[in-house]
Amino acid sequence: MTATVYKSRLIEKIPRVADIVTFRFERPAGYEYRAGQWFNIDFIGPEGQPLNHHFSHSSSPTEPWLEFTTRLRDSEFKRVLRELPIGTEVDLEAPFGSFVLVPGEDPVAFLAGGIGITCVRSILRDCGDEPSRAGNRSMTLLFANRSEDAIPFRDELVEIETKVPGLRVVHVLSRAGDGWSGRRGHIDEDLVESELPKASQWRYYVSGPPSFVGAMREMLAGHGIDPNRVTMERFEGYE
Image (spheres, rainbow, N blue to C red):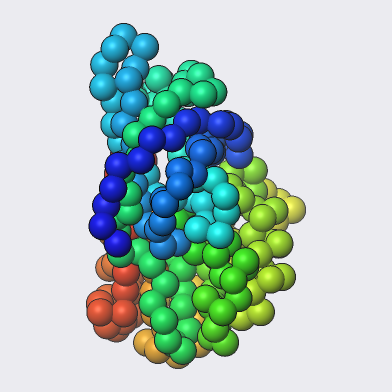
């Protein structure tokens, strides 16, 4: 697909957890992309200043709107974004990126850290709406967060898990409360060995802040995973 600039408008802001918010836009005619890809957004700020940023789609191509989901940090762009009026016109340049599901029968493991779930949500929603995208292969999401109340898209992941027969979602919490019965700590070699049998045969998709992606790269390399079986997406600015 060739990148093209489209006109769109903000139609909704959807709070998720903590300071994470989804921004939903009209989907222009002819706007096509693959689940997991990203786009550039440009608009004019309140002082007349041009603002731009790139975001992964958290929406799926099966949905009639476009979304990105982000953590609202204290940068100029994020401060303006937080207050952006509904109806604001924006330019969207898309599509970009190769963080897309590769056809085949190899089992797939998604290793997502925090806000890195957005492009994975795009892919999993696509598979839930169009089961042929997943095929008959096994798919496991290892999703790392701090605590139960910091898990974006938690309820939706439960729903998607019921729609994709081969999908398992494993939450891993570093600061879990006393009532948490799931995995604790971090995604490491022991967890991979436990949750992903015959780990060298899986295809890996890693997404999250740079420190998370770097740690996963080292962990997978130390586990003997062929780097050609690993696709990564770094979310800059989220350390």
